[in-house]
Length: 280
Image: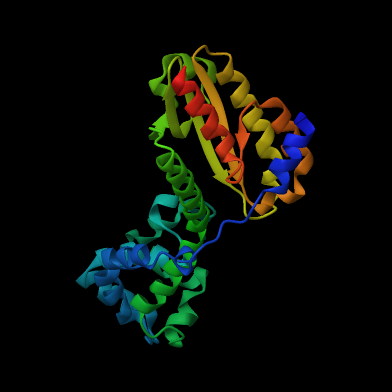
């Protein structure tokens, strides 16, 4: 077939991965996150329904100031995110730096809108409330989960073909690749070694038609160009998802420039190539 025909087969076979209900929320992760802070959240329950909030904060601060260290999650902010906000004094402050004094805690409660929520008892139990917050935050993990599902499908096909591979390999372990990539360090989802050749494989899935999808092909074209000039290495891009349906032109350009582009439906072509190289 011509290159144009090959791309037509590739594009026509772009699919949506079938997923189970456990894809939407990782409740085990949610519960683990809650477990680590549940004691302090329970202590913060003292603030619920308090009309004199400052007095309640002062009492709890005197009893256990560490209880306030988890308050950031009440506004759906994790400490590791290093989110900032402008304070009343006109300076920018990390959200989790508000919990170092009663004055700053009151500023946080009042300016975030939590004062009314707590005083009017719109929240009855902060542990239950944060369970909901954590469930909402976990939706951001769906992209990672769908990527893991796709990688597992690919691994399954490799296993069925008795192809050996390494998972999640850093580019820096290959000096020649590290040199050509420069600061653009990569983590390859699979590395497959054949006689005289290593295939460096990146996997991704795009289930939505966002603006970012149109920018991705060019970045992989650049990576492939750098890697493929290194003797003994070849870049492979395996991608899928209906997000590509609105980026056909950009994907076609990458398909023409990168020798090895596959999706789940056309992956057998890459497997056949590996098996053939293994015989040589």
